[in-house]
Image (cartoon, rainbow, N blue to C red; front, side):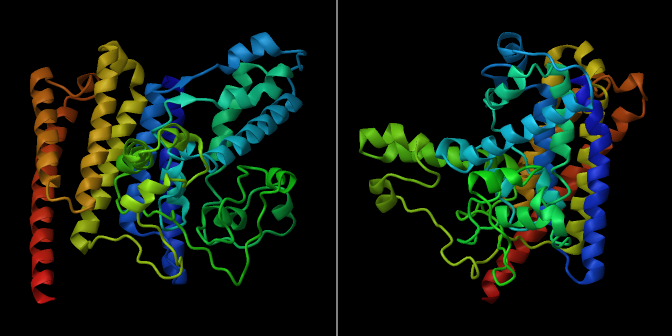
Length: 426
């Protein structure tokens, strides 16, 4: 956990810088693809995902180490070839895991958050799942295990393989010549994120596109078919925690409501989007029929509110960076303290994005959260070991929590008054 946390300390500001460069470039070219609220939602999703990973909140059915120990038929000597094989094995496994997520109802819940943005930009690359609690990924690495690729090599190559999937989430890079036949490019992945009928469920490759060509899932981007992004059942929220579980909740409700016992069991492993006939009739769910004529989800945001969201985003990033940089120190206070801090990050994201959704209870949630945090600081005299770094951190955080409560209350009431005025005017 400590090592991964330190890697994220380096990666997070780099990703944010690249996102800001993309926004500036789009603004300068008159083609801004980064909406502030959508970007904050995407980054909030990335924060929850990385926090979950640092806390180790998932269990593998079978570990890769176990597979190597029991299946290895040879041992490749440490060399550049070993890392190439590991990278290819990870990409092969990634292709099939990705394809499975788009194929069966149950597995889509683990992936819906990544496709939930109705924009396509570098920020949406960070929309990653927190709903994967049981991992089957290692099972797809059996070829690497048979070749005896050591577990430590997979551990090194894994983060590199993941981070290498960031750059192609952009609309500002066009076709890339001969590379289109080898690696996944922005053009390929725009197709994958599109909800146009011609593009649905294509281009599952993560680094190499030749898997799609080999297994028949390749689709080229067409100039006369502009990609439209999102999911066909729009999520209609900025809250990434809600998005992570909304498909699973729909499956649970459908399994409960259907009168056909066979459907209660098979719904989980039917093709993506399948619902029992009696449920479709009685409990319809909105689905986009014409991808070129639907209204993107949006909530009004003044310049002042946008400025507040940027400020709040930076504060959240600083708070999560403190956790990642001090995992070992927080664990020394008790392993439960690390999970309490992780819970705080999740609540922080939840309250922020509920506020963005203009929930009328957002300021109440914010106040309860901040009062709890101030109480914790007063009781302990510090913020999770902060006095070992600086005595100024705890009082500064008290001030932050107080100001945050006031700001959310102000913007919530202003927004409610504005909405009331608009309704009366209409």
